[in-house]
Structure formats: C-alpha cells, structure tokens
Image (cartoon, rainbow, N blue to C red; front, side, top):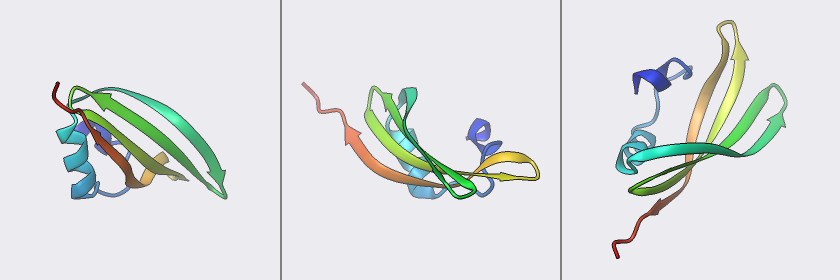
Length: 82
C-alpha cells in the first residue's frame, strides 16, 4: 500500500484495495491508454495466483508531478480450482 500511496493524490477506495489484496498479484501490464483533456486514463491488467484484476487509473498532472486521481475496478477474474 505504501508503495502505491506515493502515486496517489487521494486515498484508494476500500473496494479497490480489497480486490488488489485478494488476487495475490504477481505481474502487471498496461493494456490501454487514452488522453482525455489534461488527464490520462490507463487500463492495467494485474495477474496473480488468485486471478486477475483490471483497473482504470486516471492520471493528472499537478504541482508534485503526475499522480493518480481515481482508480476504478473494471473486472475481477478469480482462478477456479482444478
């Protein structure tokens, strides 16, 4: 959490934190990017042993540089036991 906090302009929503913790995430990649006015929206896919989480992050430039102003969970995929 503390590593992510330096990139956030506001505290992360508890639902987003729960999704990140539940997935035991091991890798990430940017899967989409769009420039929307002064904002940048980046869609990330985070994968791990518990499944995958897809997030949208709204980046905004401020006095302290680029920070994430909002994070939304787009999709949660849980790994099914064999």
